[in-house]
Image (cartoon, rainbow, N blue to C red; front, side, top):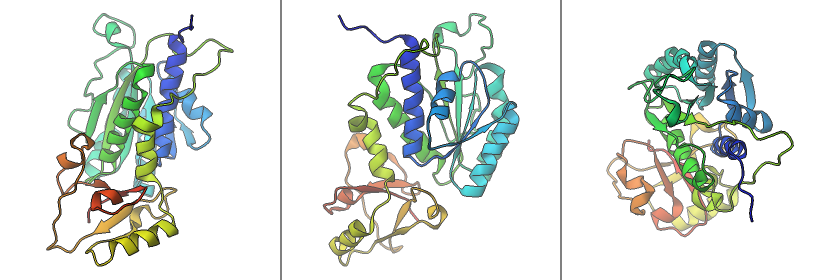
Length: 292
């Protein structure tokens, strides 16, 4: 009989999935306020070599530090805290990010649904805690090995809203059940084999920097088409710079995409992720595109 992984092991994989997907999307800074409920995500950040970790005992300071990183680099930083009133201390920096158009990813951890509204310690209503001062909010489901693809797609969606037009803060509320971490000595769970096919591969394709060879091939395939690709100045120094397409003002087009892709639901004034294939050009990679 196959032994089912414990709650702590699933929590650890959930936290690692969050951190891995954020790294794939180009996030490089994490401002962490230590706490108990956010242990699975904090440990995942600490175990990843691709992030610069900033530790802030005070959540208000951590929030403004992350805001400053967003203002300086143009790329969103992550701010992370435990459950309860700790999250409320992020509010000033979230409001500042909203009105200044600064990208910011807010991760708050929470008690599971069965421990809410029953008098549990360090528990408040964190659903839409920041009201209309965020561009996007989602209550993440409790950790589940079968839903890591959903989690990656949700992070993709939050990230695209954070860097959108206008940019701003996004909020993901992440509940965890106890035990929060696996027993000492228990090996960690690997990422599910379907992760890349569902959510991870989407992130890798969309945000991968196109190489010169592919760019030349793309240019020759486009021919006389009235658009071209160039690095977005705001992201040119990023490890994974965004690429943009430009169209003459008189030119309009309607992208072809599956209904479930979400592309057709966006206003044309919003950033649009569009692959070369969507333009009728056969290529094996996709780029992130921003409308100018």
